[in-house]
Length: 248
Image (cartoon, one colour):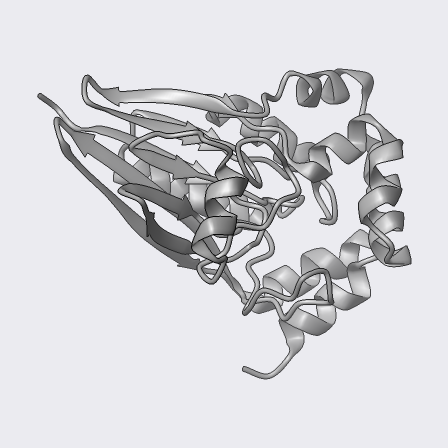
């Protein structure tokens, strides 16, 4: 039986430059499906362009917490306190057309993809039952089981933390492909993160009972990232420029 391959992208956050580079890499790698695990448009300079690319290129669309913020502003203030982040979300909401918001409204909270007759892949953003839940390599085993809520699949994949991760939990593989648009150097639990000038994604593959995952990093031009942020003039523009111009 031929292998079934699914590319996982997540947390693009309006970074068109990073998304285009990742999609080019995915096209060269060759996959059967591309799944977007949410947080597509907000916080970055090119939300509309990113939404259009995702609409054209992806096959599965998961609702992230930032996607939900664009649909209902009541969710934002329960989880976000930073004035800069709040301003960036509001700016993104104001910029999107009704049709673009309707596209986001079609995103699903979780999706199960059959890979082969004996393996499957469960997709979500934070956890199967929450799009703002942090699943980490150091999450205690009992807590992790509770957060997974009894859901089971050969492989389970979510984003949200902006940290690439592969963890075996009670026989299941738990995957985080990292962030296309804002990869974090380390998990900071809501504090201002240090960003890395590359884009992250993953490819899962299944053939009969054999399953695997490969994690990818695509190097980006920090000067180009800084220039895109500088031309944006958004609430987070200065922060992004500072991050990309920081000495490595």
